[in-house]
Structures are given as C-alpha cells and as structure tokens.
Image (cartoon, rainbow, N blue to C red; front, side, top):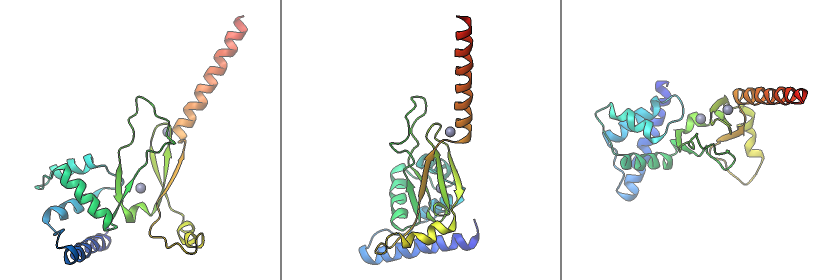
Amino acid sequence: MENKVYKEIYDGFSSYLKEKRDADGGRRKTGERDAILNEICAFKGHFDINMLHARLDNTKFRVSKATLYNTLNILIEAKIIVRHHFDSGLISHHPHIPPIPVMYELRKKAESHLHFICTQCYCIREVKHPPFLKNNVTTLKSRFTPEYLCSYVYGMCGRCKNKMQKDAQKNKSQSNSNNSEK
Ligand SMILES: [Zn+2]
Ligand SMILES: [Zn+2]
C-alpha cells in the first residue's frame, strides 16, 4: 500500500479516536490498535477474524479475539473498514462447503471493485469498479446522500460453468448409449 494512503487511513483513525475520546472519555488509542491497523492494511484483499488473529500472533501483540472484535467494530464505526456478508440466502448450501465467514476489508479497497461471488463454489473475484457506477449513483435518489458503495454480483464462475457443461454432456452421451443398448 502507498505510504500516502496508509497515512490517510492512519490519520483518519487517529482523529476519529480523538473525537470519541473528547466526546465520551473512552477509546484511548493504544499501540495494540496501531498494530491491528498495520496488519489490516497489509492484507491484499478480504480477511476474516481468524486470519487477522493469526497474523497478530507473529507480532508482539497477542490480542484476544474479543479485543479484536471490539477493535473491528470501532474501525467500522470510524469508516475505515467494512464488514462483508458474502454468504447470502442466494447461495445454495453444499454440505461439504462451509459458509463463508464474515469478512472485512478496508473501505477504500472495497469501494474500488465489484465482488463477483460464485454461488456454487463460493469463490470471490474482484473486478475493478467502473467509475460511472459510483459517479452516477447520486442521480438515482436525489434526497439520499451516499456514503460508500459496496457491490456484490452473484452468479456462476467460469470453472463451475465449464464443469456443469461437461457433466451435462457426459449425462447426455450416457443416456444416448443407454438408449442404443435397448
Ligand atoms: Zn473486496
Ligand atoms: Zn464457482
């Protein structure tokens, strides 16, 4: 990540914490929180709490999951990260594939791409956000002030589609040969 972007995120968090501290006397900024933010910024894409927890275990800051949940919630409030619920009712639940855990991502990153989610194998592909979508969203509802944009597109990935077509072909040729045997 560019230093400039990192500084922006870091400063945003600091000023949010300062504001909160002034307002409610709580949410002191700690080295621990900085370490958490560092690790979050180092993720290329989405992460879940276990991934973050594992990374922090390699630093001198070993934090409990309860502390992590708490900090993640503060980072969401501070508009620094977003919580993704990729697992929607649309996804057909295969018994052998566990549902996607709740994922997080820097809001800045999340806004820059669409999420293409395969409802068969759960893979998530990121596709660069076409700028026109973000620029035109304000014209859709005049009295609504958009804050950020997060887009999910559910469907079938190329690999699953290929597999489905191959399976269909196999079934067809099988039933053809069964018919000719009769
Ligand atoms: Zn994303
Ligand atoms: Zn797939």
